Every structure is written in structure tokens, then in C-alpha cells.
Length: 107
Image (cartoon, helix red, strand yellow):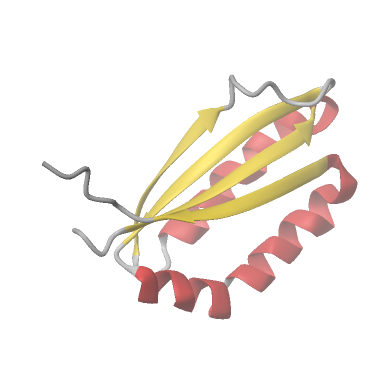
């Protein structure tokens, strides 16, 4: 599993849209997990650093088989899926993404 990748999406959503966003996010994550190469996901509420006043912080960490699976997702699926979120929530949400890979702690 050394080639595994974590694709992390950190989200701030306006508190007034948080419940609606969580409902949408549940279906969104399920759609992503159906894409070849994804092996799991976990949703977190962000505690620290705190979200901007009036917002809720969320973090989704997706696990992928390898970097090639992430590349395929970013090329073939991400533009459409990101556009859907923006069409539904626009300025009521902001997302930042990062990619993590396992590192050896050394002996």
C-alpha cells in the first residue's frame, strides 16, 4: 500500500448552508467512492484551526490506490464534480485541496 495517496479537501461552509451542504456532501462522497481507484473516505469536523466566524469547517480525506488513480480522477471527473458544488453553493462555501502520500518514519 506504499503507493496509496490521500486526497484531502478542506471546506468552509457558511453556517446557514451547513445542513444542506452535509446532505449534498453525503451523496457527493458516495459518487466519488464509486470511481475506480478510490478505496475509502472519512469526514472530519475541523476543530483547529477554527473556521471563519459564521462558518463550519469540514475535511474529507479520500484514500486512493495510487497517484495514477488520482490523476485520472482530476482529469476525468473533478471538473464536473467541483462545478456541481459551486453551482449549488457558490460563495457559501470555499474549498482547499492537498495531496498526501505515505512517508517512511525511518528506523
